[in-house]
Image 1 (cartoon, rainbow, N blue to C red):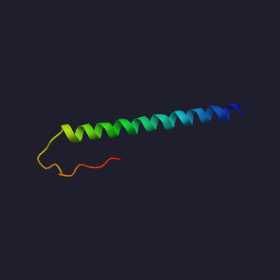
Image 2 (cartoon, one colour):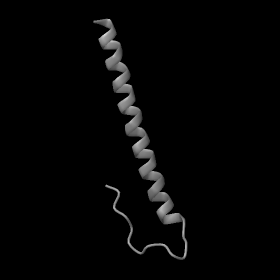
Image 3 (cartoon, rainbow, N blue to C red):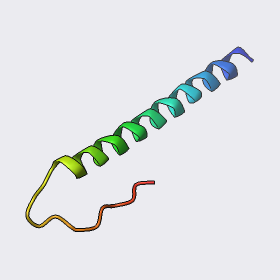
Length: 49
């Protein structure tokens, strides 16, 4: 039983890390969209929700 519980803890930690990575990437994309400009940039801002 201890082995299964140990695995569950690792899986929960992996999901939390993945969720944090998604949040950080979303924030970086939003910041880069407003701060980085180029001449052929699309007019529409993407909806990252």
